Image (cartoon, rainbow, N blue to C red; front, top):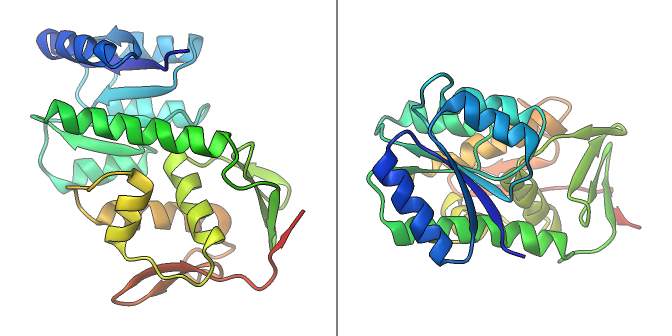
Length: 234
């Protein structure tokens, strides 16, 4: 069955072009030019991914992203015409999995969409099996669920993939560039702070004290790694 993608943008020519190009790749595409309409579609339908413009009438992309993340972990790729770093970082803060700045190359956009969907599919197929118990939290690798003190924690697709990679490669230090290429699935042309934002969000969700992390550690000048002395697999 074809993956279903919602494309939201208020530029009719661009929207038409995106719909045509992505349908040629075999995706089922729905579109919207209005923020509130798009949010209603998301509430009443199931999508495999969302391509979401930042600037929209009636409800902007950041607000939509924030509201969606309260209910769903569907992968979100943010489109933005802004070059300022604050808009890009804010999109990630609100739960977007990735961003691309207009004007963009269609081949690059397709590569990013494929990477997002591939990561989800691989995890759904169970590239690792069982449940990992790490201190006070656990990772269900098949169900893509994380719990802390028996309470489920909502992670974005990229946050989950990042956590699982670090956990399954304990003590291995990854540079930001390596994490971008491995998790995002392509040669990333953006800011390496994308990784920093995701790491900080992960720490806030799974660490007792995110400012003094116990599990996701920093090797200054090199990158990030996972440390755990209590891991067991059931």
